[in-house]
Image: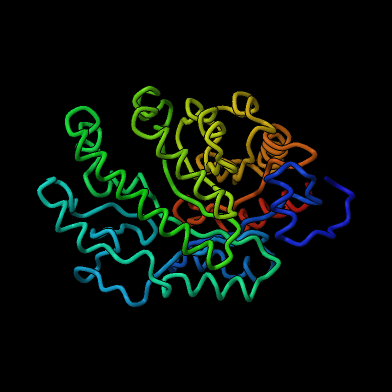
Length: 335
């Protein structure tokens, strides 16, 4: 991609990368959490570099949570170290709580929820804007707890399917809201892999999610938007299925646990949206980082697209300094 004039707008460049139509550079997505520690690292980064892709979260200022500290899904995320957290109490630890929990969910069709997204579209007509859907299916783990959620696939099929249907219904409502605000894509966060293995058997995943996710992705495309799926862990067992059902972009923060050589199987079949592997990049020397990022771009991307750089949103959580973050971005800009 070197030597080509940067004539494309950010919006055009990202679209061309996703569609394998020849972006004139590797697009950048510089997206960071807004807590104090991460802002200290990234404040000047956002002044010095332009992001081609912007991720916007929906928030309804009129929504009243069930209590102080509770989020829109009805649980408290107890933070540690200012950057990470875990659920304090699972609101659906007992299925007996389902009706009362569902009755307290916000109205995801409320126009006020998408005013900020619409405003950003007006302010940034040439940027590729992405609406954040939250964690979608991963919310099950936050609502039920990991152990309960895994048992549910075998012992609570009816209740589990009711919850899955509810989450996809709310997801579709958010998709409609973002489409009306002029977003180019939506993103959901779903970690479908463990560190070195699948989270569940492939046939079990297909039984519960294939049809529902395909219907969801089709709905997004009908609204004129692309679908970006974040999924960390060892997810190669699902990549062919993600492509089959129409996922446009796979966002992963780890690559080395699967191996770039293995991931090269999906080059030019789906667009990758990645930082340098967050479990290893901070410990690399500058020369090692340069070599790894060159290999990652060559292995996952192609001359006509298929790769977008995305910063990790919580650099403080992985002990990344501002200097190392700048180093990554400069390597991408020079690619």
